[in-house]
Image (cartoon, rainbow, N blue to C red):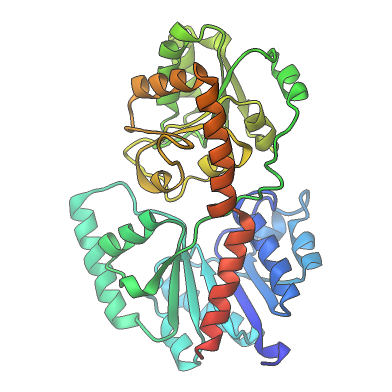
Length: 392
């Protein structure tokens, strides 16, 4: 296979605001590994990327790793979106196309791909919206119909970030099981090594002997941050010197602040807002809480995987993709969603038992390295690309 034939086109309908986290970091590491394998990587991003990239220089970093950057218009019309993708394909002449955040996979563009014998891979990192029986029934019928019209040999695989996402798309979208593959998200294990936390503790005014209980989340509906706050009075009854850190921002931040004030917990809580050093805050944490609400299950639960990588025992809602990250009784606990008292009880259990806490920490690091490393995620994608190409 010649070099010109080995060309992957990644079409991304979101742009990585930072290459240090999640999707942006995946694109960067994927580009590096593809370059090592002498596979040319073209990344298509929305035009907004160019306007929003002045301070971080994400695009230059991607280009230094070996990527070629292209820009695409964002269209709500499927016809216009398809024409834009056709234009891009004619310009790039890829041998394989990977579409990110552009669901549904059964779309008009598939007909062009089949005509040109272009293999397609889609990635699905989201879950369906909160359940509404009528809407779910209508949506499933729409997607089932679309799959019959636009299904083609070109769609080789739809990558899901968890088995939960895979099962949800079979159930809600009527997607065929043989089209779906699970590849877990990956954490940069090297970045999430344990830090000496003196500086962070000093910044927050927290002594070394004080246990820190942390929640990292976008503060919006469905994340369950209010359950984290409601659990704290129960915890303080037993662990009187505990401190609680909330990392993140969002639409419900003012409501969260009012709840803390109403419960007279202001002296025990630290709200950091958005941070670029989450790994350092996790490194001083005794327990990480992921209190996702039952109204909107996590597709994966990136924060939980990050916590395991640092060696923090994780308490997470027993729902969605989180059930595949946290091993109950081995790396932390799974608790019923929307149950502050259970969160508190399990937190007290960990903080009161040093042997248990250390066992969770060791097991968590091992599990993160085995299942949730960025290296593993990237290699599994490359293996998928090569298997698709070899079948052509």
